[in-house]
Length: 391
Ligand SMILES: Nc1ncnc2c1ncn2[C@@H]1O[C@H](COP(=O)(O)OP(=O)(O)OP(=O)(O)O)[C@@H](O)[C@H]1O
Image (cartoon, rainbow, N blue to C red; front, side, top):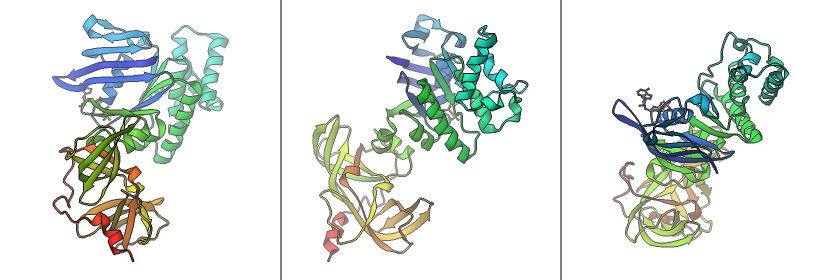
């Protein structure tokens, strides 16, 4: 059973639709992230689930209980929904100790004495703050304040935890550590969580599933691997990093298995196989996506698999990134972006050959949202160049 169900939810502010027909099902024990650019409606969606904002249309269910359905005049206030929320600002009460902050939600429910104490201590142990229980809440670090906010959110054992950019006030290093801690706490407690962020890395590393949103709509819902390597459309593909998106034409399409199709495509850069989540008719214009990190440096004499993407050219730019080196490689007809291990000593001006396997190629319907590939008008078949020039 889903723990949170959003069915066709919409919301407008001053005539502007900021959430537009959103459908999301979050299952028991899942951590689902709402990811999208600033202003795309993530926080408004979370606030409607919390009951801090009323939806204009659609229904919201927590478990099998309808908590919002404007068509039926139904709206349950936040205190009658079994959930709690962690805000970006933490909203810690500065005049209270760490213990009293965490105890507060239980006190308003009438809990007192040993019962209250043992519940609060258990929550503080979970976030490893038991040693700081009697400190004033303002006398702990930013990361510890964030943990106070999480302990306070989980102490009353809500069915659902809502987190709105809970790590964004922390520095990069602490953010990584707190994200991992938060995820392991969520797994241990089995609590269902909805997490809002505009940070792609955070969404990909922490979530069971990611909801990619833009302009109030859901673009795709999938596992981190699906939204990254198998985007439904160009908008999702370009939301994560800078993929290579080669214009191509479909030559053949057949159903493979598990909702996947195998296509034979021809682009100016190569002729090869790629996978897709949908069928295309012969002659359809498509985009073939290769993520930069799927390329590896190869010797010119290496044997090439049928349909692999091979590119020989000169390194036009090389950016050292610590773990990797971001390259732009050009030849007379076009350019690709490749991300190689930094241990490979590639320099600007080097002539190199890189290869990405056919299995890494993903086919997306063509669309107007990305600029045209610079080599689109050139028909030189230099995907075969490697074999032609190999000794
Ligand atoms: N109470 C409000 N009154 C009017 N407009 C609002 C209100 N709350 C949000 N908006 C507008 O609704 C749109 C969506 O806002 P929302 O906060 O949901 O976006 P978001 O994706 O969470 O953005 P961010 O990542 O910047 O927090 C924005 O254009 C915002 O200005």
